[in-house]
Image (cartoon, rainbow, N blue to C red; front, side, top):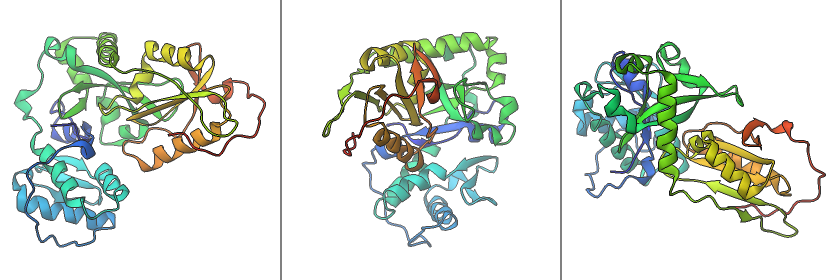
Length: 327
């Protein structure tokens, strides 16, 4: 099964914190060969958050009773198995971007299928030796920390180039990943630096097959180059944390250059001399607002492999830019 979109976590501090921390990757890429029967859900056109939540509940009640999903005061938050909570935010965004029906029911079924695959608490990874090869770094919005007591429980560190983004660490698996908690480090008797070192090494290995090659900007009187990292493993943006990736970006685009991570599954960079920066900036904004797992609409500077604020680079002399947008 391919990875899917949403959040969940492990039992370390109880099922509530567990469910809030799980991330279900790439719903749109999941295959669902066995077509399910068409139900008579109460909402024929669930185009509001409340109606969509009820639409999901109707399907879950009929076909996934073991999940024990129920409504909460928030339309995008469902109670799960009477203990944890599951967010519908990314699922709703995907359905909305796909213009709702048809296909909406299939997306909901894939979402519920993944929830049934969440491993039971007794399968929790108990030793660092078991976890070491599966640890990865991940970038996430600071807003995640507003949920329950995650700020006190979660393993994370601020990113120096952004007030809105944090660096966390996850345990990767075939269908999902979950964020590490401080209780994990205590149980495994390892330090944050040990976790970070292993996480970076693992992502470097996973990135070895990701070819970074720039393209020439196209369009009338276009100048400069750009590159895009868009992979479906859930760590496209997180690759920016790797010095080797930042070095390669500078080799391809020159020093200094610009880089952006509008969402978890996309990294965009372009050269200092590119005269189509406005088109790229507009792409970043759209990918932030209209795609799953948004991170930031900001553009950053990459200077000698260090990520800095965009205004740390002196602006070049402006000339008219071509209007054609890059893919």
